[in-house]
Length: 119
Length: 110
View 1 (cartoon, rainbow over the protein chains, first blue to last red):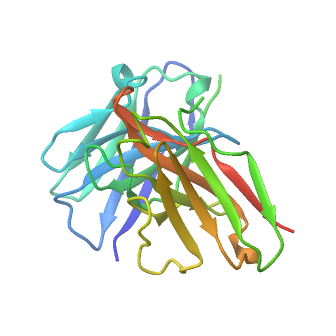
View 2 (cartoon, rainbow over the protein chains, first blue to last red):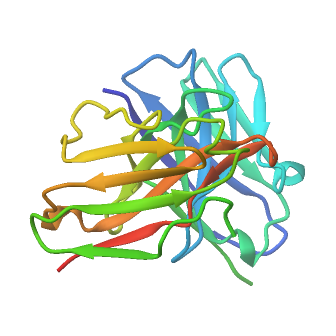
């Protein structure tokens, strides 16, 4: 049973860089798309992007200029960095295992990390 | 605003059947698989239906998915109190070149 556990800073000031990490336990790291998805308080889900274990990345066009998703196959971890955050980046961030370039099948998900951007 | 539109809310009494619609276009639902998620209060989303109508292991057969043209639907038969949650559809969008989620539907068990 694959499990994802995530962590990272929960309070940022505007213009800082958001940094989160997700560890994969109990399953293969290869062949999947390691993904990040966020949910602003009281709102719906937004796909941020993904990194295939081969190193190929896909990003939401609306966030692409500020986002980097990296993977570390030696530790079975992947990370998210979002630079120059604003209040609009306040959200619960989820890591998830994805199943394809053009697939929105994500399973399982991490527990979520609330990131608040405030001065 | 999402390109996949769902009704904001749906409700039913225990045992009833509830259906949630997900309306899209040819660039998303019309040409790509649809997946559905259940998000219980305060929890991470959970995959409920994949590739239009398939159920992951462990998901009760009370949940079923369907697709026709540019719309998809999630049905919950024999509604139970533990089904009270938010439900989201999702699909790849060829025009946006990205992965999109529906606006979400809150299901209330009366």
